[in-house]
Length: 276
Image (cartoon, rainbow, N blue to C red; front, side):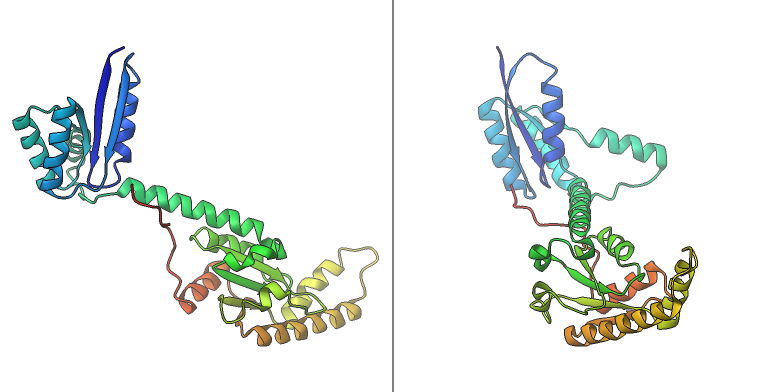
């Protein structure tokens, strides 16, 4: 079986060049040896790669968006007798001709999109796993902890923030007003938000629910219970020194914006991976 050496070269991570090289080589009944060269941003680096390619009789597949470097690669490869294929430029030329737009020439865009997706999925998975007081043993890994009264949209708000890349845990405040030690020990360490709603809004919602029962529930008992829950919530918020937000007249997007601004959260759409 014939053997082919392939060098995937890029001024970013080189994943695109590598995938194209592998996909192409699979069409042939050959043995392939693929080497990736990432973050090649200097002419001296290109010279070294091309010398290695010449010595190994390798085909070079490259994705270099920096124009001067790409031109240098093409010219030097020809001078050294190395077969070098620019897999991006033909498509960039076609898109430019079709749209009349100039390419941005920004390195690593594909990888950045991959990071964005990865980080969002990680945040969503974490937030789902830490909804409504679940998995307190790993709540320390949250970016934000939300404590909320009944019907303050803790879960929808948490998921909205997760889609922005934040790992959110939420915890319901009940009649006892107890704070788990896993949350208490994070006081002053992790950002915490208490979702508040005025008593009248709570009563209106509870009354609507009460009248759906036959016979209707005792409204006076509901009033007493809600007053106790509300007072306990205020004590919890004060003890944890939470940022308290009244959500009675706010939609989820507005509440999320307040949180993002208050804690200077940036939309976290990147995660750190080791370089190649």
